[in-house]
View 1 (cartoon, rainbow, N blue to C red):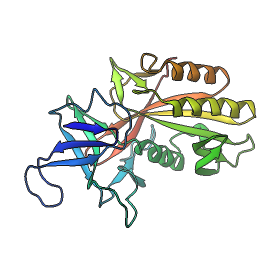
View 2: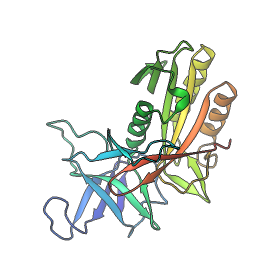
View 3: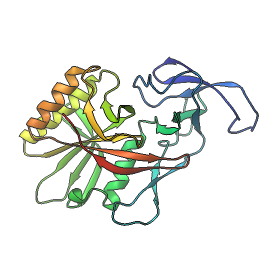
View 4: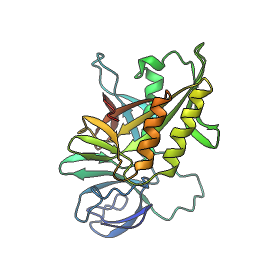
Length: 257
């Protein structure tokens, strides 16, 4: 495996997804712009998704309901490319086998999982909002969700994809993120204007016991997040169960600032 740029990787196929032929090197799209240095290393087993198909994801009901995962319209590998798309790759990089642990590396997945969670009541304290809008402009940014329909006022919700875990602690970001810093500052301003604001970190693996800002990689984001929390912005983090055919929000873990 190699990674010529942020959005492209080259991998050697075990079996061609469409022809069934064995072997060959192909270029694949990487949806996560982070560094992924601990995951994308030569010789590591990865799993691809065909860009021509749309694999369904899954959503696991919150405890104490023990029912099996419920299929939803959330796409595990994001939306299908529109007809006539000029994309040059036939595959998306979907999963990495990290020492026996499957890790999702598609940064489009967390938004779909949170949207599904809002629909089925995974977040009990957010059930008071009757309307969910996606990709809403606020200030100089676009927030992932705006929740409305509550007498308590509207809520802005921003989702962050997390793939880096060290010693049981998830770390965000794994590369400097000016965009992420802008988002938390916008959320702090929203709170000052009377809105509720939440950052949801979706850890796309299930070996994390907590989450912290990655101050070593991006101290500005860490400082900005802490200041936003002092201003009233809420933060929460969830791990995911990841399998070859689905990914599910699993459990909430503490955010240690």
